[in-house]
Each structure stands twice: as structure tokens, then as C-alpha cells.
Image 1: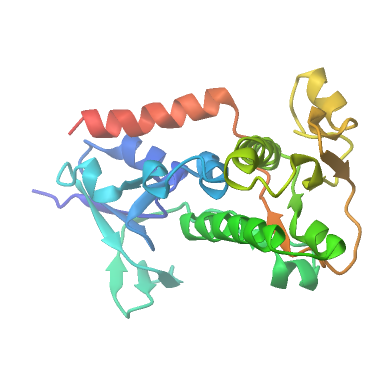
Image 2: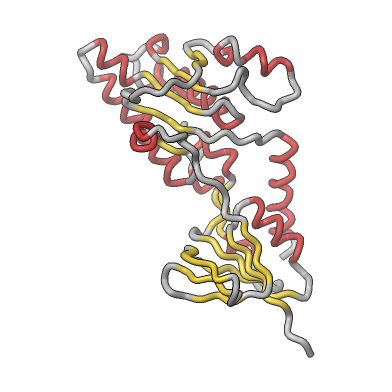
Length: 270
């Protein structure tokens, strides 16, 4: 009896789960490796950052997907891949051999060489980062509510979002709606008219690649929302006290439905 081939999937994002779902049930020994023990539904990170959702709502532990159906989960951070020896070396010196290797490690934010933004902006790529962003936003509101200096107060209430893709636009709208509802109820000393949200995007229109002409018009009207404006990127020192760097992802309804269905099928198949 021949031994089943060993398949190593590095990364438990949407691509990794898609590969796992496709290969599950075949005569293979599959190991899913990720540096965190949960799958993160990244398209909704902006709702965690704005306080609309709790982090655990969009984080599904891999082990709940049901191991044993020819696959298992392994927690670890990849340090080196030895292609000649067909093995992956993890940071804790563990070695995982494989016959087939699938790379689904995701992407990194591109700051285009702007060190000031790299060092000061907040990324919304992971759960911890979204929660830090949420904390910074509410801390800015607290600071503004106790600030007697008008100019300093204005700085605390200025938010910059970099990236005019779906994540950036959704974050912009969610932040405005959150502040619109929150300020009268919990911060009566602050006025919604004082809030300034700047969406910085390098293209001619927001939501690049969208087929809708409406999105093209949005790019020239400041997202169609009050107290917001769209600006083209300029190389300068970022001196705003709260800066949100939101990676542009083209997550449309069809993609969301597909991946939500994928996770549901993984649950129901166990």
C-alpha cells in the first residue's frame, strides 16, 4: 500500500482554505500551517476597527473546522523553505517535510517608500491591528473632548484613510456612521461637524476596476458623504495624530458570498 502524498499549505487565508476544501477527501495527507490559530475574514476588519463588530465574530479557529478528514492544523511561523530537500523550517526550529507545497501567505502593505507613513500609520491587515486602530480612534475622541485648544482639538478629530479600494471606502463610510451615532450619545461636547475624514487615493476614481459609473463619480465628490474629501497622495510628513492605512482589496458581494459559503461548507462537511 503506497503512502499518501504529503501536502503542505502555508497560510490559512481565503486561498489556503480554498485549497484545503478542494483537496479535502482525496488520498492525501494535508497540513495547514499558519502563524495564528484562526481564519480571519479580512473584508470585515474595518467594522472591528470602527467598533461595529467584536473581533471574535470574524475569527474562526482552524481546529473548529474539524481535523481528521485527511488534514490537520499546525501552528507555526515559516522561517525558511528548502526546495531541494522539500521541507519547510519554522521559527521554532521545527521541520515539516512535504511532497507538494502550496504558498498562500498573503500580501504585505506597500508604503511606496514613505518612511513617515510606514512608521506612523496604522495598518488594518490583522485582528490585533484593527483593535489597535479602534482603540486609537476612541482615544482620539477622549483627547479631543478634553482639549481646550481649538487647533489641537481639530487635529484629534482628523482621520486619514489611505487606499480608495473597497476596504478604504467601506472604512470611510463606517467610521462616519459610527461617529454620527456615537457623538450625540456619548460625546455631547463634540460636534459631528468638527470631524474631518480624508480619503487618500492615487487613482482618478475610487473603487478602481468597478464596472459601475457611479463609483467613478464618487471619486470626484468626496465619497458622496458629508465631512469627507478625497485627495491625491503627496509626499509629506504625516502629522495627523490618527492615521489609518487601509489596504485596498476588491472584495465585492460575489466574492464575499463565495468565501462565506466556503467556510460554511467546511463546517457542515464535518
